[in-house]
Image (cartoon, rainbow, N blue to C red; front, side):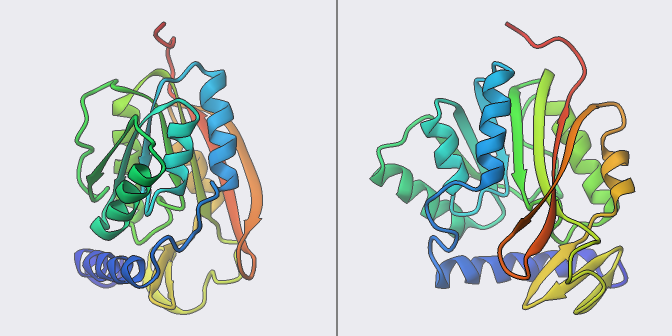
Length: 224
């Protein structure tokens, strides 16, 4: 990116912290449509444990736990995860743990230790293309053979692409939120060495935002 990536990362961390603090439970309690899709994919694959990256205040992590998965939820916002933990206690949801983690760092998990990974709008945050590739490499490392990865990203067909404050590398900022808009060739590049099962276009929220929901599978035979 044209400006210092670490500085932008810290600005974004503070912005999300302040946003979650000012607007607790800002996305509501109902799971996202991509999470419902992911749960069906994970069940069909026989998954037992799910890692959610960028869980925020946890509407999707709570849903996965209610669906019977053992869930590890991470986010770089402690405020969001505190809200998730409080909601889990109120709803008597167990099978769920949280950890503050910045996805620019290696995932704090052993190799081949989870059955499925979910990331809604996480890969399209203020990450460079290099950082996104490194993250997907880490996801491949922690997934067991045959494990599923479902993620969503805003793409270059979105109305906000190319507008707002540019940070280079297809990252543009609106209202304090920096977004890396994905071209299709980046999706394909991230699937190299994987089985790319689906790239599904959908809309969400205001404008409306234009997104892809991507489902890909780590090669190998799932463990029984």
